[in-house]
Image (cartoon, rainbow, N blue to C red):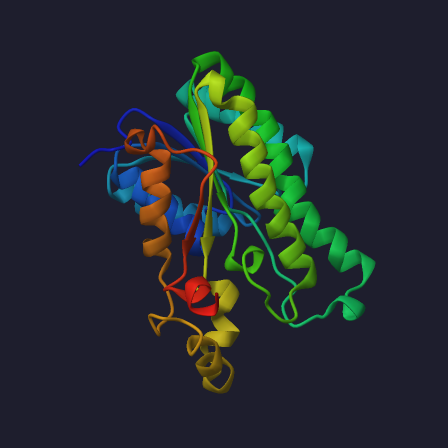
Length: 253
């Protein structure tokens, strides 16, 4: 089923984990893909897999903290594919294990610059193209940290809460121009970011005990929801918050 046939999608942080799964799923569904990330070698690895499956892909190395990189992503996307139909703001980092009084200014600034200001920069750069087309879909990748209290994630939680709020603002501001915006809130997902936790059963098991479905989620499971929200099947869906969390948030409510 080619739900993304003819569409062009930009996926930030598409070099690993959830972003990689999203990029591959979109390509399998017919989209032309632009992936971004800080490491060219990882982008090349993902791109080679997509091309092996006859997909169209461009990798652009850099950071969403760099306005010149952001503008370069948009320019190269338009030069290569002519349009931008979908933006997935996935790039992000965490500050795991630090309570607020243990968080220094540099850590706070870095987490917010990538997780929320980076989304602002990339979305601002992409919107004019979507406005000219009269349509577009933006999917932001947040976290259950924005929905429930989690210990030792002060800066990360603040950034993801802001991302959820920004999503709602974008949905209201651009609906009349045919642009939708939704946010997906994953729980614990088997990604490189969570690798150290996955390897420590003493830390992992108490966390899984909070989940109604007692296992770790997969990047592909998140990608399935993102695909739906980015596709025309979700044409009447905007401003929504979608936990993909094995029932963790409802189990704690």
